[in-house]
Image (cartoon, rainbow, N blue to C red; front, side):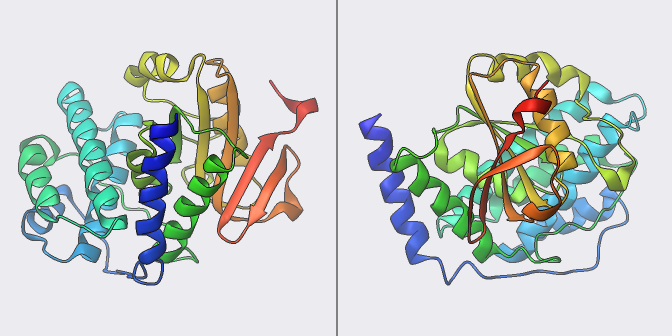
Length: 278
């Protein structure tokens, strides 16, 4: 544990030094197909554009798989999704630690090109870069998380569950820096989800990574907390030893099913309300 804390202290020092530099944004008009996405991803050189491209590969493919819109290539689409997540953790960890390598995204596009072309493409604008969450805010969230771990205020998570898909740029570097496993569960009001959804092939893997472990479920923007609540109650079925919710932005005034345990600048920690735990 001491070695881990020393490593986290070093990571936090880098994040502190980059606090004002991690402030880029990229609001390019969205893609309309995976063909267009592949073409842009194969040649991207800008670190900010690479962040944008990464998300708009992950989100549409995740949604296509969970909505059964992969047209007879489900197994290969699942493999491609895992490659996107792996590349995302690697690229965004490097980006937030000051060493972005856009060739990771170039290689990713070449690796998944044959699979994703022709897959149904659904574009959904995210909060990061668009709605009150910047790269500077994500930097603040990650380094505050490290502070709370080193001060023993919250446990270091074994597994991070990202609320799909808007949290991806938060949870990918967080998982890379903390050395945690990363999974995703979706509950999206904008997609008309009435409950938390899991990609069926990922259920056993999520259970293995959650059962008996310390777990945090991360959302980008927590308003009523209903999506985070649904994701946390679904995660709770897998019997973690500790379970928290977290968000960069949060509004504690309209929550019925969650209690706020910590609330600082761009850092919020939540727990399921005890009398509503399932």
